[in-house]
Length: 100
Image (tube, rainbow, N blue to C red):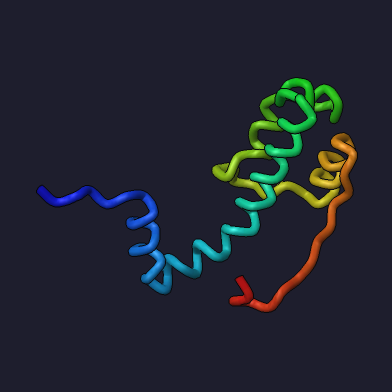
């Protein structure tokens, strides 16, 4: 019986395709930012509902903000407010393509 491939195996195989790799790289910044946002909120002991209250918005807006499946990208001002409520500031930078 052959062993089933793991998710890592499938990811590595898919990333050998240049088109898949380009899309993966394009999404990695957004994924990392949202992963950090969720981690900071949870480290602060806040639920999405509590975060929404602090920002004067609805829980569904926080859910959408933290989701990778959202069709719209949040504004920098929105991300700055999110960070500020958690006691952080936002830092944005640029790096050469392919530096990851």
